[in-house]
Structures are given as structure tokens and as C-alpha cells.
Length: 182
Image 1: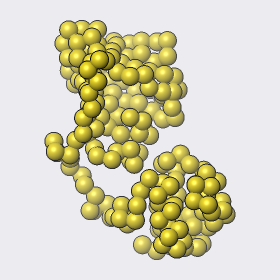
Image 2: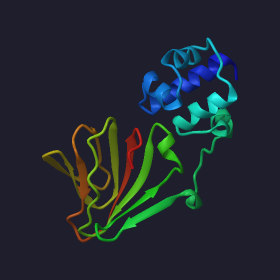
Image 3: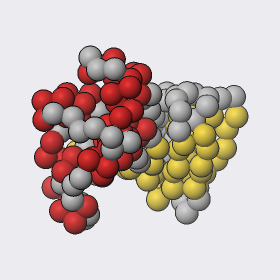
Image 4: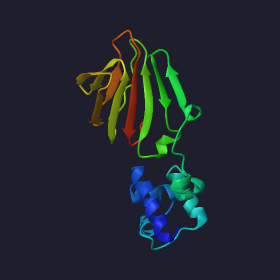
């Protein structure tokens, strides 16, 4: 990978993590001008400086230099991670490990009878959900919608939102946020 490619990839990571050049520079004790020069391929950081920059961007040298061909594409049952909240009646299963480093974060949300997700947002980004099983009520701000099996929802997360199950049957939703939010 040459200097220009390193700079471009660093810029993509910075933008993905919603940092300005100034914010990234501050986290790394560098100047905004240096970050700009690196991103434009005009200078190359030392290995120690690159490690600091990558750490601030939530990654490391190995992941940064890993080619797309070596990246995992298919994720199996052993790869997922789940957390349950029995009081609220939900289980979140992260379908892609370490998705918080990606542009999107896909999860499977299961709501027990009368279950409810946590409140999320507002945050920058978008939300997409596809109801795999059951019927749920989506609340975004003061508005609400019933979404049934086979239906989807999509919105900008400019207001607080959550989803709840008013039925006696379990609800399963494939839920994707961009950027990651869970």
C-alpha cells in the first residue's frame, strides 16, 4: 500500500467514525495540518504515529492492512454474540462481530410477548428494520406505526425511537443502523 492509499484509507476511517481532522489530530496529539497531509498522500506517518492514529479510529495495524479478500464474508452461528434483558423482554444478537467498526451494524432483535427494546437516539444516521416474524409497534418521536411480518421500516434517527411487542407472540426483527449504534 503506497502513501496515497494509506492516506485515503485513513480518511475513510476518520469519516466513518464521524471525526473531523481537528478532532482526530487532538486525540493523537498531532496537528490538523499533519492529518491533512497524510490523508492527501503528501507525507507518511511513522509506524508509531500510524498506530496512534489507528487506535484513535478504533482499529489496529493488522486490520488496517488486511485486504478485502482476506476479510470474513460469511458469518456463522459461532460468530454471533447475544445479550438478553429479561426484564424488558428482548434479546439482541449481533450478526457480524465487531460491526461497530463498519459502516452498518446488523442485529437480530427478538421481543418476547409484551417485550420492548431500549430507547435509542436521537443520533446521526439511519435505521432499517425488517420484521421476520410477528407484529410490533415502532415509535419514532411522538409517532407510531404497526409493522407486520414481511414489512420493513426506514428512517433517519433524528428523534428517539424504540420498538415494542403488544402481542402474545414473539417478534423477530432484522435491524440495521448506520453508523453503528448498539
